[in-house]
Image (cartoon, rainbow, N blue to C red; front, top):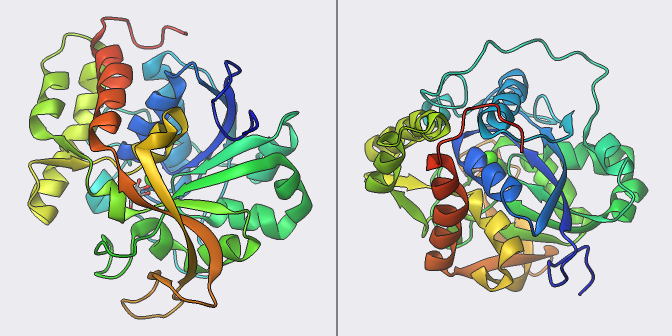
Amino acid sequence: MSDATRPSSPVPLPLVIDTDPGIDDTLALYLALNSPELDVRGISVSYGNTTVENAYRNVVEILRQGGKRARLAVGARRPIARPLRTARETHGATGLGYAAVPPAGVILDFVRPLERLLAEQEDRVTLVTLGPLTSLALALRREPELVRAKVARHIAMVGNLKAKGNTTKFAEFNAWCDPEALATVLAAELPSEMVGLDVTRQVVLSAADVSRLGASEAPRARWLFEALRFYVEFHRDHEGLEGCVVNDVLPIAALLEPTVLTFQPVRIAVDLNEDDRRGRTRETKDGAAALFAREVQVDAVRSLLSKRVFRWATAAEPAGAAR
Ligand code: RIB
Ligand code: CA
C-alpha cells in the first residue's frame, strides 16, 4: 500500500482534515496532531455542529490550547440546497460546550476553500471528513480533476446502516445536514470509506473518563473537560448514556491502526427526501460503490484516546506553548 493511504512506512501519512468543531471533532484533531505517524498538512473548517464562523474560531482555539500549529482553510458555510441548521443542543452555542473561547470573527469571502488546500499539496493526501460533506462536494463540483489528483483516499465519519440515526430515527447528522453533498461525493466513487454510527455508537467515553480530565491541574485538560462536560450532559439527557459517543475519533484511529475498523464493500445511496428519511443512507444494488465500517476494535480506540489525548492533556503544560 502506498504511503499516501496507509502509515505502513516510517514516512508520516500526509493528511487533510475537513471538520466542523465540534466537541468530538476536537478529540479527533488532538489525536491526529499528537500522532507522529500522521502529518496534518491542513485543516479546513465547515459549518455543521456550529456556524462556520464559530468553527474557525474554535479550530484556532483548539490549536492554541493544544500548543499546535496547522494550515487552515474555510470550507463550506451552508448546505448546498438545504437551510442551515446546526447542532446547538449537542455542542452548545459556541460549538465547544462550556469551554472558554474568544468571540468569533467575521469570515471574509476570499478565504481559502478546501480545494486550495488540496492544490497546495505536493504529495497525494488522505482526506478525512468529520462534518457534512459540503466542502468536498463543492470541491468536486468546482475542480473534480484536482480532487482526484490530490486525494489518494477519502475516509468520512458519515452515515448509518443498521444503527439508528442520531438526527432523525433514520439519519446520521453529517448525512442529514447536506444529503445532496453526500450524494455528490458518493457518485464520485473516490472511493469513500464510511465510518458510521454502526461502529461509532460502540465507542463511549465514560463520564468517569471525562471527570478525570476535570480533576487535573493542567489548563488544557480543564479546558477540554469543560467542552466534554457539556457533551456528556447532552448524551445523558438525550441518549440515556453515562458518557458520550466520540464519533470523529474513529476515522483517525483507523489511520493509526488499520485493524481498528473492518470495512466491507457496499452499494449505497442517500435519501434526498424532505421527511424524516432525509439523509438516510441505505444499501441498494444500483447505489454507489463505497466501503462501510461494519466492526470496530473498541479497546484499541479507547487506548489511543487515553494515551495520545487524555494522558497528553493532563501533562502540565501552559496553554499556547507551541509543539
Ligand atoms: O453524527 C455525528 C457527526 O455529526 C460527528 O461528526 C459530529 O461531530 C457531527 O459532526
Ligand atoms: Ca464532526
